[in-house]
Amino acid sequence: MKYLKVIAPAVFFLMMNCAAQNTSKNFDMIAYEAQTRGSLIQITVDDNKVTYKTNQEEGTKEISKEQLEELKKVIDELNLEEIGSLTAPSEKRITDGALHAEFTIKIGDKEYKSITFDAGNPPTELKKLEGLLYSISNIKE
Image (tube, rainbow, N blue to C red; front, side, top):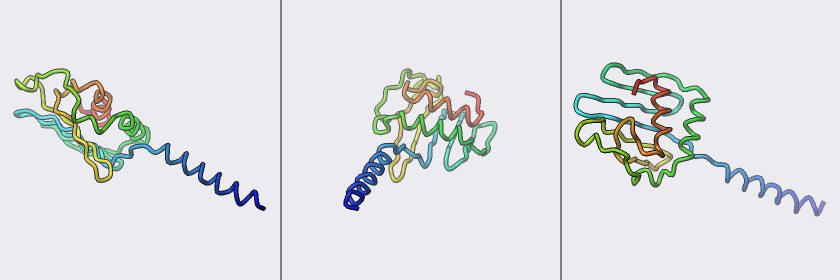
């Protein structure tokens, strides 16, 4: 009986410690906005749905479990504290050669904003996320 009093709390502690290490960044909202004079693309993911809007169309659709898991995986790979200081690979947006694009990711009470970059040519770290959002919303780049 003495051993049970010692072993049970130790096992419980180990289980809780392992569970705490496997936490992922469950996002509350992901917003992507790309715009320039006369053009607009907005994609927002929250809960289990994606809302999209362009100059030609707008709508809302459900996200599958697989797509949601893929989004979570991509967000987990990002260092959210640094997305505001990444370097854009091109500057076409300055001369209206590309849409100005940026991400906003909300997790709990914190909101992370990316730098502004050319739509279709994000920093390498954000490329998967941009492609996945376009794929989920079925918007053509």
